[in-house]
Length: 240
Image 1 (cartoon, rainbow, N blue to C red):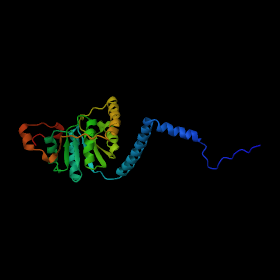
Image 2 (cartoon, rainbow, N blue to C red):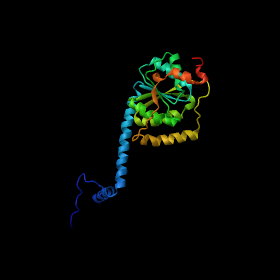
Image 3 (cartoon, one colour):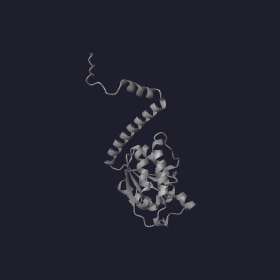
Image 4 (cartoon, rainbow, N blue to C red):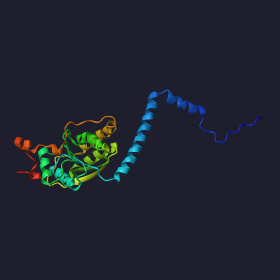
């Protein structure tokens, strides 16, 4: 009676025919191969990004990002500029240029490190146009200046869109005296969060540029006074 062949020690229990079949399926389906490759690439990017964010979380703030919608946020930013004149400040579609200029002048705050961007027309737009600027500044941790009534939408969008580029977000909430310009609702928040997730990926391959970026120190206050302008009454800038 013939003896049964002994299996080799350490031989895989997974049949070779099935292994070959699995490799053939991958090899003969380029779409499947591409999806597997993209999945591995995405996981690698996510891991590197999480490590970067964890490191940035313990670092000092190296830029302030002011979301437009209330003059109180710019008043708060002027005080920060006095305390930390070395840290750049980006104001996204806030008050008109002369109003911001007068706020910083009244506070005796430096203007050379303050930049104004006016391409954004929404909270999503603040990050859409602001993120590339912060990247150019090599920012890793940003102080996000907004109001309590602008949450949680502003914070979530910042964490998604800035976090996708390895920028840690530290919210700085400004106390308001009246009602800011930002109106929140859950449908609006859901829509913004949804498109932010999509743009977090698409933004890795395309960076929009805003042509309306300028230094606060370049504002010609005399020309503005000749043209005439009005500031939000909470700024108490009448007669300045």
